[in-house]
Length: 334
Image 1 (cartoon, rainbow, N blue to C red):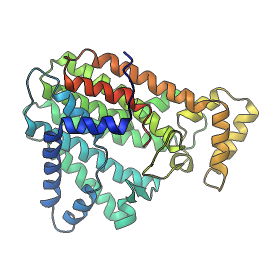
Image 2: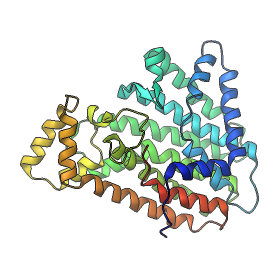
Image 3: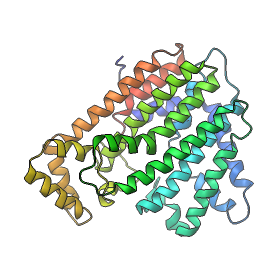
Image 4: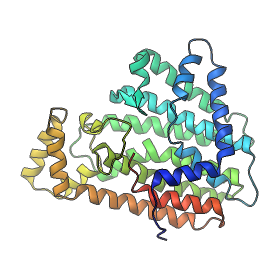
């Protein structure tokens, strides 16, 4: 399946409009978490929740939930979406501290605004509330899926730290890290969407596989955007991965296709990546080996596999929007 590509942000906007009722209810659930939080946390959560991201995970969940034979319960869908978005936000707060990131979504990160100690605790509170959002869900596998996704995110972050700066990082380990750090939550959101749609267990599992492929592609594109490859109006700092010693897919492709001398030179450059002009030198060498193009092609392969699974869904407007999202993902600029 090779649908006509469109601008990802335009497609995402159309998708959000299609499931607007569920997303609006999701925002209400999320803001209730802030408004009912204790003094000292509430105002910080209102500020944090006001910095809305793209809501890709909850939008995908809503689209899948509406692919079934009958419309899903909006309140159930909203609580599932809120759980996913809060878990994602909690992970971002903690990741920004670990990575030393100063800007997120065009504004100061939580630890830059409130200090590291408060930011850690705010992230913990948001994580706790993400679980509470689905604690009363009638399908008991739903909170388990969220809990499992949280475990995967945490383990993925630890694995990334354990292998930080490892020039001999294997493709297998890289895939394991991004599967846990990024794909796991999108897989969980997709599974929840399948449950809300009333799909049988087999199709719910297919939803999970579809979400995992989409998530892997999403992270690979993120790796490319960190270098500025294909970026447009990027709302976070470039070269963060390089500065933190993270070996991502473009570098792995470079190492597979370089001489011993080129490897030694690249390893030396990576060690001083934060120095002025060094990142640009790395970019030049990666471009010469077409490392970015190869990484993007791998992302496209994952998207093609996600599209094949989407083709198994009942045919309706919501399925068409899922297909459009997947088709446009590889060319997103932020």
